[in-house]
Length: 246
Ligand SMILES: NC(=O)c1ccc[n+]([C@@H]2O[C@H](COP(=O)([O-])OP(=O)(O)OC[C@H]3O[C@@H](n4cnc5c(N)ncnc54)[C@H](O)[C@@H]3O)[C@@H](O)[C@H]2O)c1
Figure 1 (tube, rainbow, N blue to C red):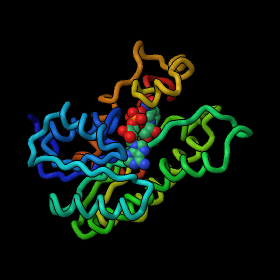
Figure 2: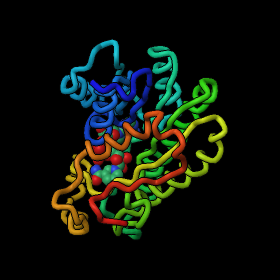
Figure 3: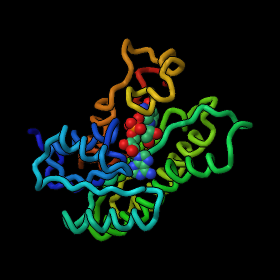
Figure 4: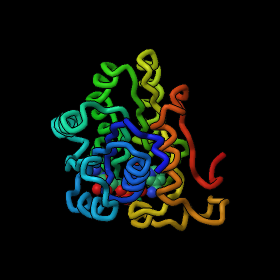
């Protein structure tokens, strides 16, 4: 074990599967203590069974990160378990549903904004006071290539993910003085349940690399952003997309 994250205490939202699970796995391998969150308790159980971490090194908290009360409880449990939070990864999200502007209902718009954007606001608001107290912290927000360039059939998703970029940059400016760095990762096509459900054909055409992305491609960057090696990097949006966008 290289233990690049020894002494780091992290929360990873949406860690039950996909990119969040890969980030939690990489953090655990690098020696971090990790609170794995997901809205789905059985996905969390599966993740823990697959990762098989040292029981001292992790907790699971089932919570809907779009619910302000649940988010406060999530952060309180992380603090109780490990005494603080050094790294917050806002990864939980739901994907575009393939409906155009005229097909979308207001409820569908609201739900996607709540889960993909309001959750990031809530988790940051709950964690930043601890990070200020500690005098250091790293926040990693998972946006999307769709938040940068848009995708037909993904209006609320694109709006939420573009919102995550605006939130990231504004918060980075607010908290730099406290040595809290805030960055966004904008993945392109990554092979997960989310992209399989939506269909990968269209996005695959834009990928220049001779394979599509894997959750681990995102996890390696998350390890760097969670480590002190990246502390002078803040307010950045880092694309990982196999050359789909440069
Ligand atoms: N897969 C891609 O191609 C891709 C591309 C760009 C960005 N992203 C982003 O990466 C992140 C992870 O996506 P993924 O592909 O791993 O998706 P996924 O659907 O495989 O995993 C998402 C996880 O988040 C959980 N989740 C959903 N709503 C939640 C809530 N309200 N509270 C807590 N947990 C919740 C789900 O249960 C699931 O375990 C998302 O923010 C997504 O928008 C994915």
